Image (tube, rainbow, N blue to C red; front, side):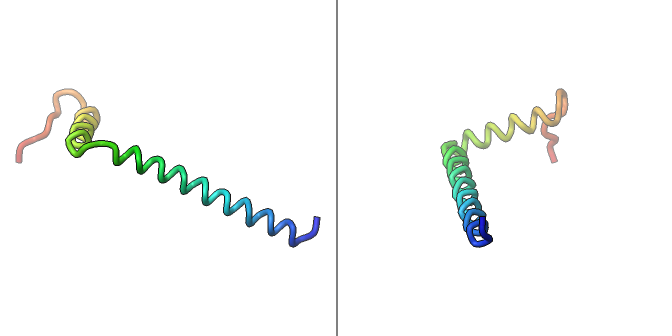
Length: 61
């Protein structure tokens, strides 16, 4: 195989990788935007409660 062909194959493989990454990012963003603001808020509060553990609710300030 000559050098030019190797570089062409590497370029095509790199471009395919960029396209595949873009597809994954777009799909993830679509899934993220499917939540309503209330759903996002509820999910964040649930995650916070899990992280804090039992008996450690939000402390009033």
